[in-house]
Image (cartoon, rainbow, N blue to C red; front, side, top):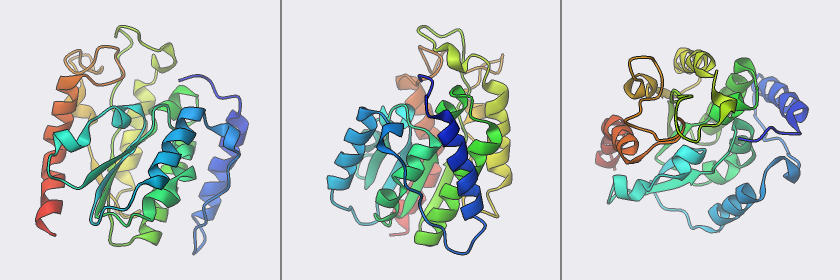
Length: 237
């Protein structure tokens, strides 16, 4: 969650993506490798080396996705993990070709908390998210995209990172915008936020130790929400 010294470049690219989304054929931009940390590059190199699994379900996101054992939550499913710790929406765009080339049955995307922690605006984040949705639809019109809401955060968690301490209002803005744009940008919206809030509207202590990442109960709750979306995918094969 460290501040990014390349923040102005990120904002520039965000505006560029929005411009590209207005034309008929979207093209992925080129990024400087220094925008992303070594862990990001290691993970992407792994992903590119893996063989394509036919009719797979791809989970895309940051550390919360990266930290989940998806194949154990959903055994006997062709489900693969494309989460990268500390990733941002621009990072997903930078590796989107590897994702779309898999021609997955479905993609579950949840990204944006790290963008907000770096003080990327809600508007800039949404431009990137909608670019991702439009590009996936362009490249794989038969792939079902599920864009999930961001989780709430809780500044009272142990080891909490203060860069997210005041982000819940922005998170709610992002979630509302994701929901509002679902039909016109060819994806289905999944509301995770409400199921993870405590009475104060913060990430429930039942589901997180640090107020940001999920514990075992948190992943079980996420599984409970996603099960109706994942099992029908299996039945349609």
